[in-house]
Image (tube, rainbow, N blue to C red; front, top):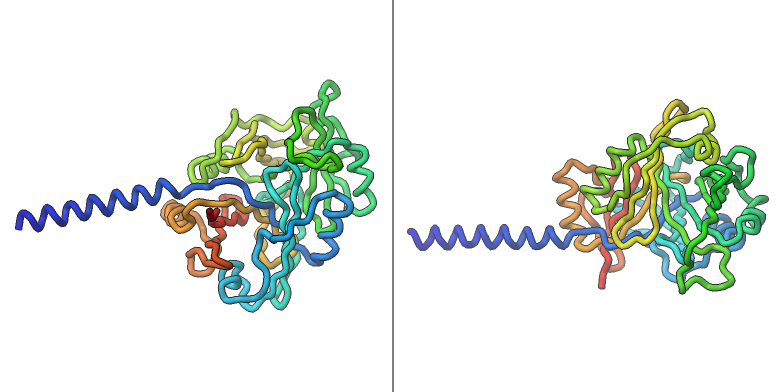
Length: 333
């Protein structure tokens, strides 16, 4: 009896050790893509390729076609999906454009200040040339005055402008000094890129990404200055922004913005709805990370609450505290 109890105890210890080892390998590896759900894939692809200057990739970062697994992942059974991925030279993320058909779709009319939004930021080497290329093809400009500004005041060297792309997504061009990645083609006007999150509570959202997904916050949140509010097109608002945070494997400093004293509403779009943003990360051991997130009360947006395998790669969607869809994709070899 004693020997049997010892064996049982040893089995429990070994099982616990195995689970611990599995959980330690469950981590975000690096950023994957900013996802835009669009109404017309060909039109939007042409805008980002021809006007913005991004480079099409042969292999989309998001699966296409129609299958039971794809329906479970997107919660849109019966839909047919088309996708295109564009490379951001020197950037932390790619831009993935997704169009759904054969399914009910309700366009999401977003505003820059709405929690759950994601702004793609592109670093450009010539602000005037970059803005001129897109000026006649964008849906509008958020920035006060309708042109690039110096967001940190007249003494700053940086210039920036925030626009609405043809689908209404916020798009920022930023000019700043510093080194350029060696693999950026000399002819590219885009020389970097990252994502900025619009959130309800900056401190609480930073805590979520730090504790659940392994992001590294940089400094403490600070109030939004009048110059930054003018850049966002919300001069009468107030709010705060994170000094910065870096996703695992990322090189750029990302930020979070939270607005107050301005009308705003959480974006609650489904993935199939044009105007719904999402962000994607490559992950080591998606099932283990998903289990840890569910145990912490995080909402899983994939049917059945489990990862699905598509084209040999596990995927799942979760919702962050602001309702933003976050895709977890198995990193692979």
